[in-house]
Length: 159
Image 1 (cartoon, rainbow, N blue to C red):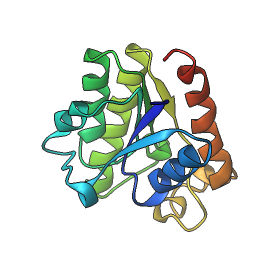
Image 2: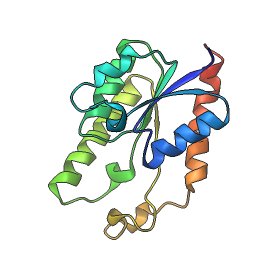
Image 3: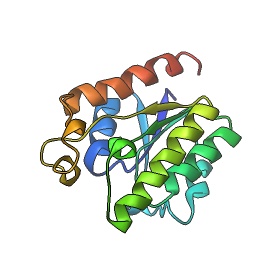
Image 4: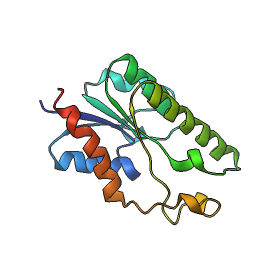
């Protein structure tokens, strides 16, 4: 059957790139997003009805990442949480304040549950860079994806 990676938010953005790379190297991918019927905000537990060996907790939908982090821990499934440099940003809008708090909570839970938490800064065109130029990232998309893949590799040997 092979090594199966669950990925939230697998059809757009960073999750799409992770999914593509996983498939290229021969991993099976189970994706979870609105496009294939998963409302992660309201029924995160539904994704755990599917069999996978590790979950890449990528989709930023309200507090869904926090819920998925906790559920993975309860089900003893390795979880790689994708964070955000918003935790270090000066934010002023209500939406960004909530996003920041969710990511801070995710980072703290990741640490306390001994789950991996990966994060990078923002690309030049991101709205938060204007007010937080110190968070400008020079890591490329390919390098960030490779970092996730590097975290998956040792988990494959535990299956």
